[in-house]
Length: 199
View 1: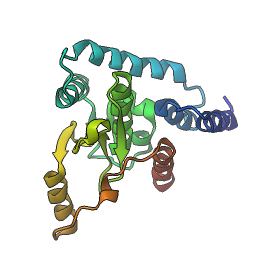
View 2: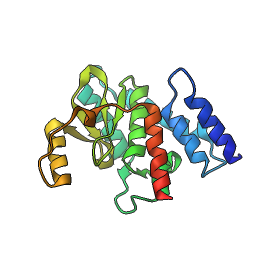
View 3: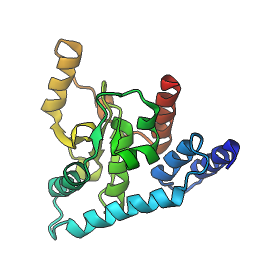
View 4: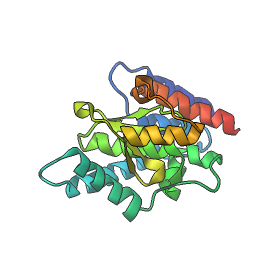
């Protein structure tokens, strides 16, 4: 496939009025690096993961229980993990590589998590938290955050405050902007920015 075709497909997808599948857009980005990439095959892999999670969900679908089921499957059973040894390798930003190797950076691991959560009717969104990309459930304005880079670690507001204090070396006041959900196009822009920085 010609590189320009991948770009055209990405442009077509994100210009749609209806919501688009973020994973599909990310795979078009990866197709720039892998022209023969079979996008539908990778979407099918994500669909399979979501189906497994759906089958394991309890009848009482409490939010924290849903997160536990996703975490156990992705990080304990499948072995997805953050790449702490070669964080800036381009493969960490290509969704097909992350699915195959089960290693990535916060934003690509978050994307897999978000796709599965969406398919099991538990919508979540990315959060541009300072220092680390997180995700959070959208229902009932839950104040719990998931860190897919660290095996789906669950963080509450006090945990986030402590994490910021560690990063900056002094107490930091939490701001509402730290936890605002980012739109899909912003998510993709951050992925592209990461790749631009890597290259």
